[in-house]
Image (cartoon, rainbow, N blue to C red; front, side):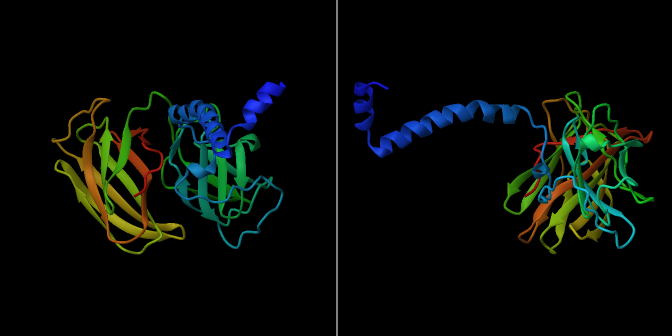
Length: 277
């Protein structure tokens, strides 16, 4: 650095120097922020409704105190390479006699991220198919009752939980048709107060039941779309129901399955990824 340049540099106050540095840093961050917005792939467990502290795969094993259980697969959809968390109990740990399977295909060690006694994290492998999640812990098997959907850029059916007020949100969707049925899990985290669920016109609330897991309270809702719901284009959203809460807790979608009269399952996804209010 020349003597003249050094003299010019020393004339700046520390505030000016800090301002210039911040400006340069902002220019450097903008391309990365844009890339993050355009590519919503989940590659870490922080992308889930419940955030455990990620743990590396180790040979430590927690001896199960009972049969394995799966409470939640978070989220219930994902692209190849996306992070998925299985929440449960008595999961032990990585062991030669234990495994995780998606649609009947074992998740290989290279796609496992974490494995503890209470959760398993993995990445959706190449060639994965939609189906049920099953775990085998030392010969004891259990299956999550929901379906995990492998999605891609062609997946069109979508749910949204959009905040209206501090304690109220509306569930909307696109690419729905008359006669379809939607099974929905609303997960309540950090509160015991009840939710009020009010379906929109043209949506029938055919069944509702509540049950509790250690991770939170589940509201299972079954909806039937009647003649007032028409086929939706990519640019349109329609309201399905309004959810209202009375306490300080989080509400998010933990499971969603859309089926037709022929009992065929249609892959669907959530947007935005974080769906809580």
